[in-house]
Image 1 (cartoon, rainbow, N blue to C red):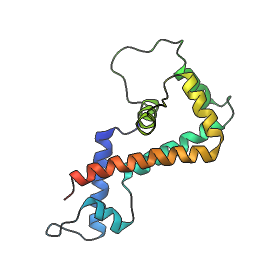
Image 2: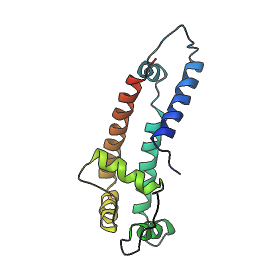
Image 3: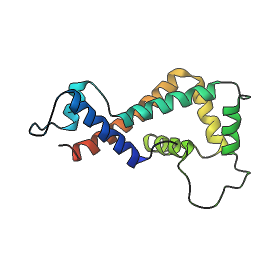
Image 4: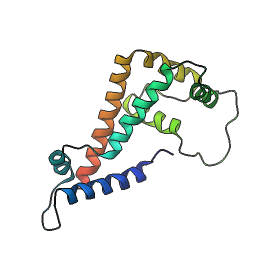
Length: 152
C-alpha cells in the first residue's frame, strides 16, 4: 500500500530525527528542517518515494502488453466493469492520479484512454524523465512548504 500524506509525514519526521542523531544535533541547538536536509545533502523520504514510484511506474508501460502488470492495469482502468461500493481504498492508481493532476492539472489517470496516453508518453524516455522530474519538483516544493511551517 502506498503511504498517504499522514504516513509520509510520520516517515519524514522519523527520517529527520535520525538525521539529527547522526549530526549530533540535540535540544538546545535549534536547526530548521530545510537546513538539516541541506547539511546532510538529503531530500525528504516522501519526495524520494514519489520519484521512485514514478520511475518504476514508467517501466511497466514500456514493456509488452501481454505481461501481467499491463493486463492488470488495463483491467483496473476498464470503465466497462462496475466499481465496488464503499469507502475508496488508497491504491497506487489513486495516488498516481493525484500526483499527476497536481503537477499537470490537464492530465489524469482514470480511464483506459488516459492510461494509453501515459503509455505513449512513457515510450519516449526523455519525455518521461521530464514528466517525472516535474512531478518530483512539485512534491519537493509542497513538502518544503510543510517543513518550513513545522520546522524547529
